[in-house]
Image (cartoon, rainbow, N blue to C red; front, side, top):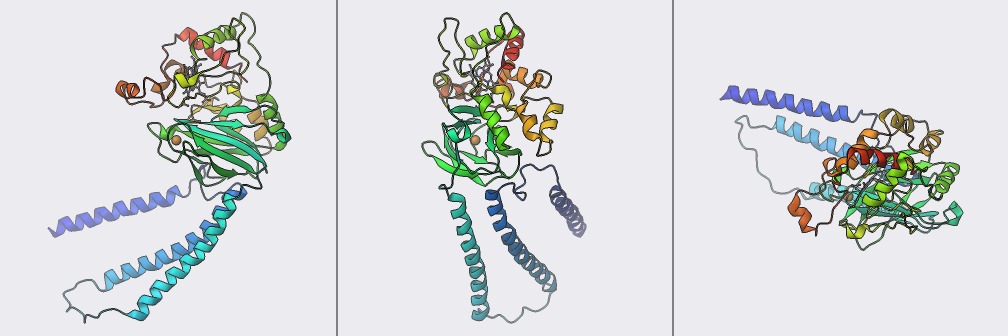
Length: 403
Ligand SMILES: [Cu+2]
């Protein structure tokens, strides 16, 4: 029996040691884009300024308690000694031990309220971006704002593009279930709730790409609902705006892309809007996703190739090498690299083709046919469309023209 105990103790020591080393090692990771301890803007700095002292105080108290518990456990453990004299209560000690934590919490509360009020401010907003969550991607819609050259609304998805040093106010809502928007480097989280509009301040100090993810469980592909904030210098942002508002350029006559446009009109336009796209009869092609998709929406693909991820930022539109060139670019050139968009040489053909071949095979969207029926046959994502490889090639050629 004793030997079993000794073995167990030895084993659990090894397990504990291993767990401790893993935790310490994990904290050494340098490639940690969602590290909450590295604020990259004034809003996340407010949170950081609050969490550092609180973490220190809580850490010291935690350490004192842990040492006291371990000391007491070892020193007074049962060695068969007689039971010590029993006493009841020690008012002085108990009152002190109640007042000290209460005081600490009161001080923390004062600073927390201060931070909450600063983060809730909306009257100093310089730019508004509407953000709508749905299973499992984010839509961004930029209302007309002449001071930024936005003379007609811009609709995009996946990557939120914003100018640096600008107080951006996100107005969040959802088209289906509750989601939560979180770019750790720029601010804390804010739930996107159907039927409500909630605001979140974002401001980036320097150009760069800041990763985030949905943080409210929202269904099968919750873990695949990511997003990125792309902060551009003001000059680069103006270029981005100009490109988003550029008129539709139809693919060259008799090109593969033109055949792709035809397939797109037949297969895709019922869900996806491409601004300026015309049907063969000269009428504008208007998407009607609400008839086909549970959330009533599908990403606007007008400038698909100006972003570099797709499907809730879960997949790269850029090949690994081209992606690294953008993402690892120093702050002063990241804007230029990002604005280059996706070129034919840089396209991640493999993932885009598999998406068109069978999107639900890349992201879990509905558990089974019964669940699909329960939503009235409406899809929660992009459906399987039984396209031929030929059509896929045509479509890829066409999508590449959507700069
Ligand atoms: Cu979500």
